[in-house]
Image (cartoon, rainbow, N blue to C red):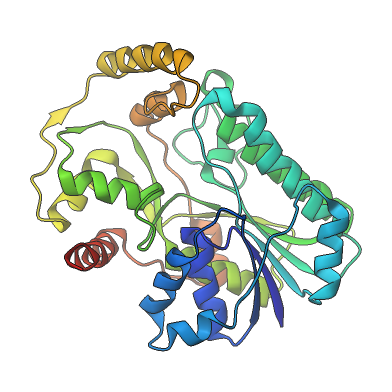
Length: 340
């Protein structure tokens, strides 16, 4: 079984590769020229004693995702049976709207097109951000339709449009499934996503906000993706969360797991909007600056969204890893690596 993994050097892609190697699958991993492979190699060492040997068996390629002919040649050359499309750009800076669309929509469309009319199975990693609906906050599920209204922001739109390309492919015969993970908790990449939050909490975060959202362990996401493909559960999408938690609750657990003091102060919404305004001004003068406070991040910090994981639990009879103990497991990895 030959498997193509996009986004292979990221947190999700690297953990996915580790799970695929457990099944003796041949992994063809996509990376950019500038990508570093150390995160993937380190994550493999979490799973295997012979990580270096297994890492050497991965076939690394640098495809031009914007060239469909290049993608078609790769699928044929490596006789690909399955595609796990984990690659994507994450940014909450609306100035990067065009770049987000080009990455999250056009690349997905090109991959979908070359897989149509083949026997290749396709798993697309979307996000709960693609389930944005200004009127639904209590029971967000696979049936929730896209209606962002005042909450519209570039990243969520790009993931929704990427999903639309997959649904269009399914209508044209693509063998595909879509997963919508919540915030992914996982060890290995400490410079983005959850890993970056761990680094900041290690130094201490004094403030918390009152928002609520869904969380999921990275190992659950990759195990579910593989199971859906193995069992040919296609033409559907699934919300992947263990449960919904407040940011305050999660930040407290994270700080305790790192032996740090819990955040003490509730951040007032007005202060965050002031910080957003200041960063708007600064980022307009410095085009390379990536603002920490944007419309999306400030709104999200206070939004209370409850996601429903009933469908995936009933479909696979799956039991998620409890997030709070998993946070401690991830923090333990971080602390061990800090000592080194």
